[in-house]
Image (cartoon, rainbow, N blue to C red):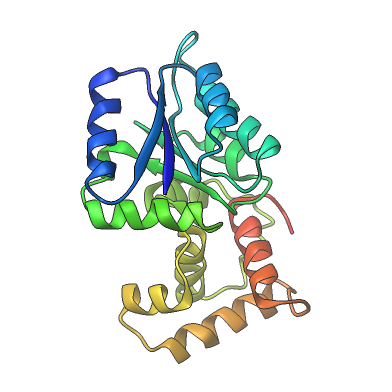
Length: 216
């Protein structure tokens, strides 16, 4: 899998490159600012771009803007944004239009290399990966007229794991329940969010968008 890395901290960038190289990834280019990330993504057509949120010149949202530009021009390229802190506005800016092929992970919470590389592969394959702490913050800011109000606590838990990008099997393993139990919860989520028609994968996307506040 071919990867472009964008981060203005050289040591961190090199460390990520070495880590990925040891786990079967091919780092084809590195960049130190948002514009260079976009240029190198255009030049190398990677499977995945891994980019920091804050990069020169303003150290604000260059990574988010680069991510959105890359996804608009090259929809098949997966993009994972790394952040030092939970930035709710940036998370919504990145994920509000859909989470397919996108990830939002917190640097300090990447402690399991296998889980991290699995998340990268999932995003490169068109899935999503959202840090649970980001999801928790988004839950806290839900409006009074919450479309998720009818969900049970377990259904909300299942939907949060769907937003992280987990499959039904992955959710079952995380919650230590059967696949059938997860399927029943997912069916209940679709029904309560009035997502009864269309393919299952399409309804999963709509459910996650509702959860993240992007609307259905």
